[in-house]
Image: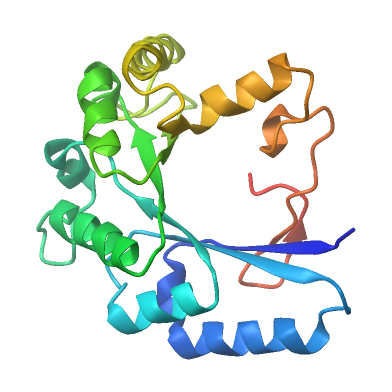
Length: 221
């Protein structure tokens, strides 16, 4: 409904579309935006393609950026390997620092697997020490052919334990200094306000998704 129109550039890996694609997208936004309205762009990326040209563009066009960093180096490199089979943690962290040098404090997106769930405090500290001020945890649940879940999937109990450990570390050491999405959104609801994330709102369906084949859905799941 405006006056702010939100674009979240998600993936796969959205940087693979190329920088010229986003230059065109921003040009279209500026051309067709109603007077008095503005666009908000968010790019979710693994960070591996963010060179200086990319970071300069994102800063100039005031993009918010989310970078996938799965806690510690060991956990991140367990699943996030490049085509040569090498871990990508160091490159992802360098992308975070490159964005920070351009004045962008990226959101850190951390997937929680069965392995991650066993190291809540360590994962939290590793993300906090990147000094971006914001992190988000995403539980990984992958179904197999017989309807069960794969070994890397996190169980509800393990995810709950992980969140409890992270909450204690955050509450006692970093309250009001570091934002953890789930905790901040829960605080909004408890204060009688409306959460920003769709799955915690009274009515869902405002996150309109356009797939690569042109299909449109009112939920990204």
